[in-house]
Image (cartoon, rainbow, N blue to C red; front, side, top):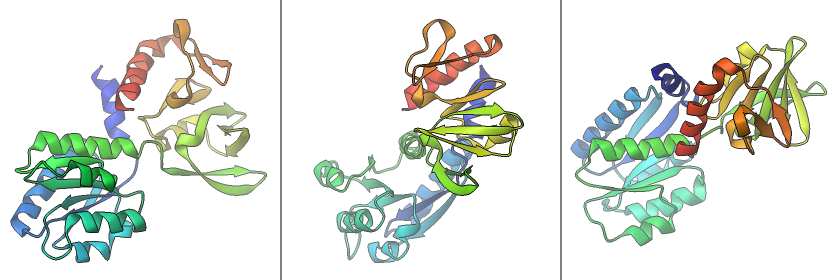
Length: 246
């Protein structure tokens, strides 16, 4: 089973996260950075982590961030105001509010905070928050695909399944079919391993698109897909892991 689980850590989204820490106490900020680094190293997740000592400093680069750990009580602009402005400038940024108090949940939810983290920091809680951040980017990386020789950039999560055909690969997205001049084995490492699974030498499927799977058979859009017998137990673990993350 270890090999099956490692598959997800090696391919945890295939993206380098940009994470901000906004904290007006440098020692606390550095401690949090070390905890985040440790957690991400354990998950084999690449990230660039930057420290900002004020909300004003943070807002200069907020549009570049995937996630930010944001202290509520900052000198000058407080965390809630900074969070509201981030939400306007960068709606996709995951905001994690941090405080030593616990009576401000309502404000945190008003700005769409992903998590509310208590001080002093506990590594387990930080790890859970980062796991949530990583899961929120499930399948959001884009792939370069072609249709009628025109190049498109398609989010992976929109791909229902990939089929190997005559030396190239076909990508089924909605009612459209795109293609690339690559084999299935070449394509597999590019796909988010938390979302996609190679069920057969000819098919990789998006587990989020599976409608039902009775008796070892897989159905997407009413079409039955073959599941290699030797992969059945590993696929079941992969699918359960996907559902639990979702």
